[in-house]
Amino acid sequence: MRYHIDTIPIWDAFKTDCECPLCKIYDKCETEFISSALGGSVMEPDTRIEVNKNGFCQTHLTQLYAQQNRLGLALMAHSHLKDLIGAVSEQAGKLEQAMAADEQKSALKRAAQTVAKNAPYLGQADSLTDLVYARTQSCFICNRLKTAMARYVETVAAMYVNETEFARAFEGCKGFCLEHFADLAACGRRYLSGKQQRAFLRALLKVEQDNLARIEQELEWYTLKFDYRNADKPWGNSRDAVERTLAKLRQWKKP
Ligand SMILES: [Zn+2]
Ligand SMILES: [Zn+2]
Image (cartoon, rainbow, N blue to C red; front, side):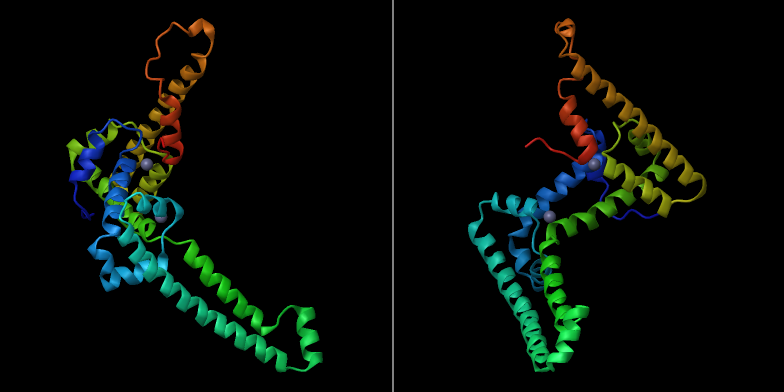
């Protein structure tokens, strides 16, 4: 396995005390992608086509808005809007044509189609809604993050089998959020084999299970602290156990 990406951010993340080093990398990439999204690169034709086609999800639109670059956001949104208007108008034209063609048919044929719910223009109406749904359900930043994270996950697995020092850091971390745990397991399954694969999967399972048990204890102590008999006992690591449990379960971040 080759290294697909710079290993410094991986080392930095694994040296950070956190519930998931891959979430740390994700956050770093997200910040970088958001701050560059409204810069010069978005005006390059390839990027602009991708942005126009995919748009941005709600989370990333909010983050882009928080950048305070109103002109950059307006230019990007304007380009996206013009492209959307073109695409919708093309589909709407086809739907209009198909409906008009339907009206030319005999009353009998149309009645049969209505009963069977298979008028040809209905397919055209589906194409229009499919186009709009595709645009509302995609995100330029999410896509970039997905590609970057796949590379980081593969590189983590490769570093584990190639670098003893990193393997120790991996085994000593506090585990991963559930999604990144599954990503690592799937990556080990896909890209490693034999002895290396088994060693990686074993280490991953151990670190994850140990740390799920650890956080379960921390969360339990958090709940027990509400009992007046425990009021004077020390918090230990449990003061922020709720926040860290949510981070473990769903990459959650404190707003
Ligand atoms: Zn994570
Ligand atoms: Zn997004």
